[in-house]
Image (cartoon, rainbow, N blue to C red; front, side, top):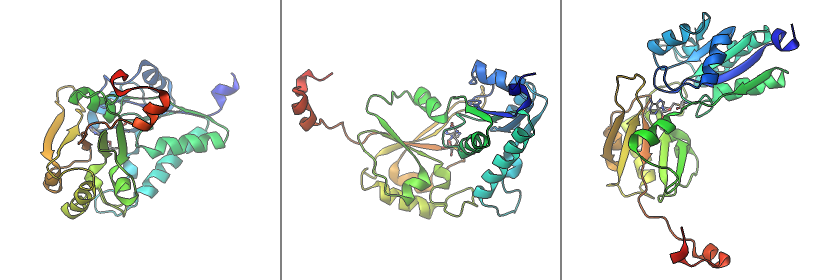
Length: 269
Ligand SMILES: C[S@@+](CC[C@H](N)C(=O)[O-])C[C@H]1O[C@@H](n2cnc3c(N)ncnc32)[C@H](O)[C@@H]1O
């Protein structure tokens, strides 16, 4: 047996959002052939579906705070990475199956792959269908039309990001916007008021924004709820809500660059 079979390895795969239908053929086959599959998927149906493909599926949900426990998500992620690496070090073919795209707004896969490689193991990521990919399809937007920006909502608040109001802006994890302790799983209206005030530097308070939730089951419809920016503090937000802020102004022509290229505005594509 070659070394590839005796040494541990890690592949992080994405399962998509919608149960069973959004996984790539390659990722599915990695799951089927793995010795151990660690998983973070939206619900028990998705877990059962993974279990139908592999007999050793271990949910990583157990590392999140349970019941009244107060636990930093930093510790949770570290424990998840350790659990994954322990099996890689034990010589197993390990798969980490995360919902959506395994490396989009998801740190565990990136950290685990980095550590595994540092320790000399083969480790890689297979792409998956992310919440954002579903959003463009369900809401009917081509992000290439005006461009788009994506931020984690709390990071957007804590750092000096500058949104371009002529593009689409996505704020991920809006339900924990401004949650700095890494121990809570929800924000509050006061934090959201601060975010709205911050956004009002670039967007009118009457600008229409969208709360988006991709379906996790084929029987569900997407949540596409339109509301005014100023109504955000009172909106119902869940752990799977993504906020989409459509452009508030047309694209601005860059006359300086056009002049350098010798292009006149009417000849632009
Ligand atoms: C930790 S990130 C994981 C993203 C995931 N890796 C992906 O590729 O979509 C969690 C955030 O993703 C977004 N998200 C997750 N599930 C979603 C869904 N069903 N619909 C819309 N957004 C979702 C939300 O912004 C949520 O707070």
